[in-house]
Length: 250
Image (cartoon, rainbow, N blue to C red; front, side):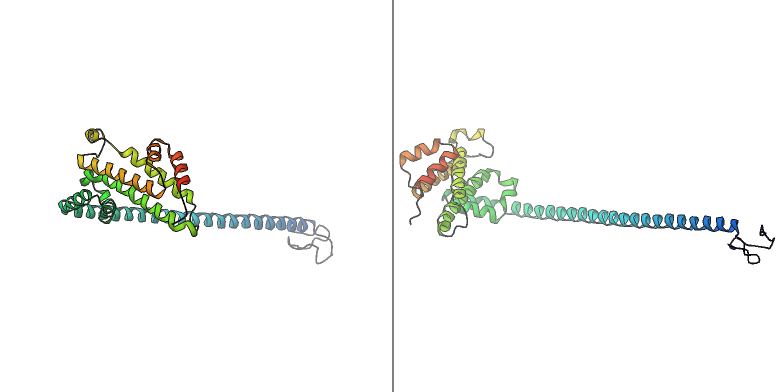
């Protein structure tokens, strides 16, 4: 390009003519446009790089989350499979010793060893077997009896230690008494109840309920008349009667 003043050769980078010293107007506009272009380019480049980093970070987080979810699902499947195999093995073991278990439970029930029935059932994991349904309700009653005895024991043990609020044990004992009362059933009516499969189970549960009432009567200082009333009360009223009859003295 030529200088418009002296006709000398110029480039777009020459802001002034090196021969006459006059301003090169085209160079000024060119340099301004180039500066604007560079700024626009830098801005776009920075935005693209920033978005790329955010996208890559988000993608990385999504990938990690997906891997963790897949790993968690795999672990759940593995645990479930292991649990299923263990249950199958336990079920096979119970079946292989079914006659022994029945003989042992019959003996414990006949001797009215309420705690023994509970601990035997738990020790051999019998609650999970469908092959001993005829003993299931006896086990449930024995479980409640065990909780009853533990509650009374801890009620005495905690009285000077304040590990638990006494009301918790009163409520639990009242609840168990209510449940055992509901489990009673006349021997000639057991066919209406699921798992009440024979007279011996019915007699066992009724005797266990009677024995539990004697324990409650003795530990909470209730009379025969109190016990008659106790049987008809709601769980909340049972709890009140237990609290009123309770004493901290040995």
